[in-house]
Length: 242
Image (cartoon, rainbow, N blue to C red; front, side, top):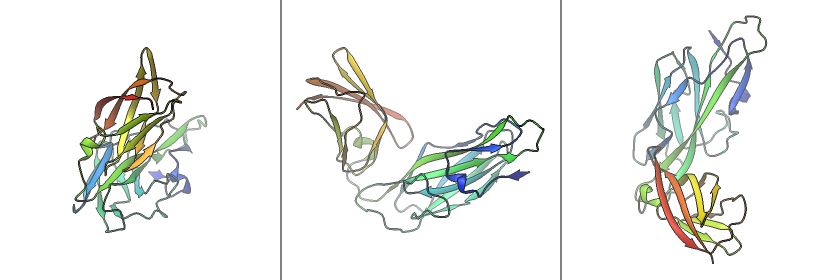
């Protein structure tokens, strides 16, 4: 079998490749996010091919630029193997090791693990109206130094929320950890407003975009954070406009 790989377009979230068979994602990972604790020798990422055909899996890590290519990324990690063939029904383990690069030692750092799944190039059957997809997965990878204050589990619970009198919402993360929210809902009386999922870096503040300014004296903030294991944790608080 032949594959289309090593192309500059591997940085795209999904590649459209001409072929003669329908396509579907077959590779799954053993987690939705990964945490590298300082001092660990390495961490493992398990890829499993749930599809019916073998695939090539190309993997690399970037520091936040989704357009980065494997040849040009500069991160303090080594990942092996960068390219592997995964047979149908089989698994492949990727190993990530820290290379003592320069990262802050007083807060968590966020990187991204990319896995590009490239199916084999099928022989032509004369049907030019079908396509084959190469899927790119992009998962969060956190580097967690030793000696950080508090805990990742408590970081989301302790977010500080504010609401201005002109309806602008704000949130501050005072912790040393990244906080990811997959759901944010604001309730004031009979009105409910939903905001897009968001991530808040350590010791950072932001104003989540809202469909419209929320003019209210008091608002219930209900949100779900994502923990180290990919689980959803509900939280709620009440804030007064100032």
